[in-house]
Image (tube, rainbow, N blue to C red; front, side, top):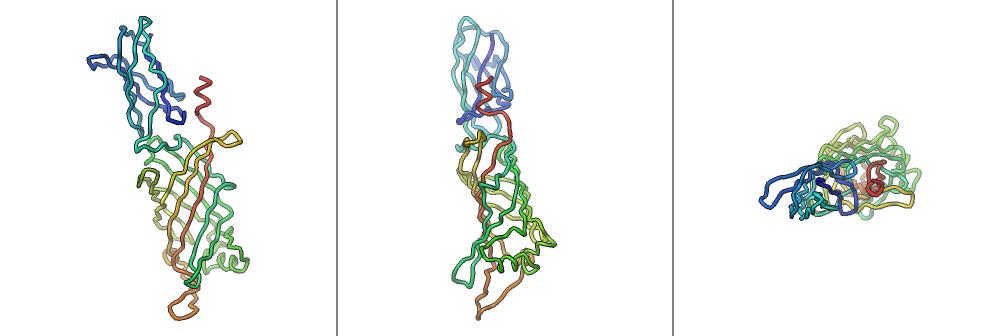
Length: 277
């Protein structure tokens, strides 16, 4: 006898700590249970036969309601209740996600001679994303090897590693630590954080787009994001400049950063666990 339910997201992930409430036809609460790590709710209670209303709530999700009919067995089985993320976009399940450098890129674009752009990329970097049940409480931490800059020209790369720019020998790491996350659209977020570059720490926001989540061929689960921001070189004490003619500099003052990121979820409860349970 009692209340039984499974609480899942639309792509099958367990919603841990979801609260399921059962009310009778008068609106009085007759049972209440909390989902375990597998999204399973089981509350022992004596129930009279008849219709009941099941109300499911969870932090960061829109509430859901369903009807359950109790038979002479005294069991209210709500089946699987699907919760949607607040805002209407299903986000990756909460947990720790490790950045996959082999399927990610950290690219830069700077104007050259006022008429074209030079693209570069960093080849050595790492990081992790901690996605919280309340997305606004999520965190991002990343580190980049400054000496790994690659623009396709060895002489230019050597100059970029010099004290005129990155000064990679004195400041070997570029780091970013988030301080807050806020929604800016249905599938877009603003990540606020601090960037340490060339020995200077500045607050830098990232315009982040969530691209989706899914399984990969190796049995892992991946999520993809794209983020962009713009930096001014002089904000980070990189003031080198060469004027090739009146009003035109060899290198632009603004640097555009483009991040294409894949992260892999660390082992934890997921859809497979629901089948096993």
